Amino acid sequence: MDFLGITLTEWIGYMASAGVLISFFMRNIRTLRLINSIGCIFFIIYGILLNSIPIIITNVAIALVNFYYLFIKKN
Image 1 (cartoon, rainbow, N blue to C red):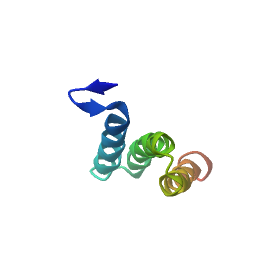
Image 2: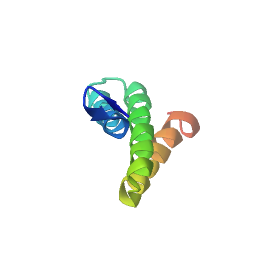
Image 3: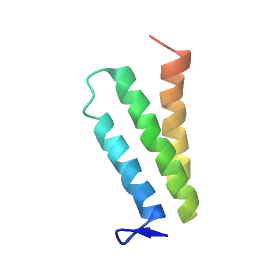
């Protein structure tokens, strides 16, 4: 499935990259972690679609760190 000559998998990869990039412009650390987590989730989906274990493992680990600081250790 293509849209503007770009596959769905590529769109997900672009959204993942944009999410991670945008997160680094956030001044508030909670907002940074939240937006970064969304980017990581898109990267996990992207890794699954590409069948790329390194992309999946790295982004699951980053998402878990973000979730830990967002929901468990709130200080």
